[in-house]
Length: 225
Ligand code: FPP
Image (cartoon, rainbow, N blue to C red):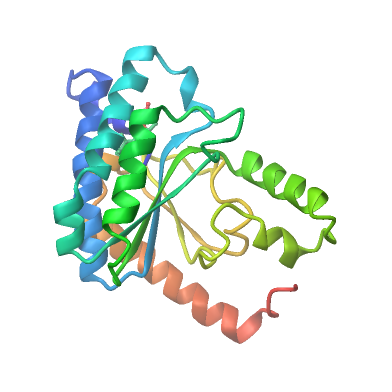
């Protein structure tokens, strides 16, 4: 969800106002995704690298996560199940503060009975950290380092692989997000910043996913185990 800062700066507002607009747009994108029968929406809320941002900005973003995870009534009305992905809370390197942990746990348990879309928020998440964590778990379980065994050790191993990656605000790179899970997935890049990301953008991303699904079934070999 890139470009919150730029969205705000272009309007002469503080960066934090861009993050607030970003959280509000996420709620709108969740509604649009539910209306389109999307099964899984995973968003990059805060990375393992984002902790180096100015303290006030970090505090503001943490507050927005608390707000998002607190939208239980709305999420239940939409039949959305909440998930979280990131460094496990008991990991010595994990940095999620306790009040955000509590909000995450409550959102997960209060929406656990929902059967519609799964919205996963990546918080204190980094793909390289996840892959290294999976490798350590394989070593301690004395398992063969196969692709299938590695996949089974990812933080949320039940989650299906990525159909389409989206990156906003004119950045045409992937960064440290779901690198293991997104092999072969097309990327939808838009110049719109995250607060501007619209239902039309979502439809274009879905079209791309659809084209690639057809392409993959027709031309590509199945994923090796
Ligand atoms: C990138 O914009 C966004 C973030 C670092 C994460 C924060 C995202 C939100 C607050 C959106 C709401 C989402 C949740 C899950 C609460 P940037 O600061 O990198 O923008 P810039 O590239 O223009 O500086």
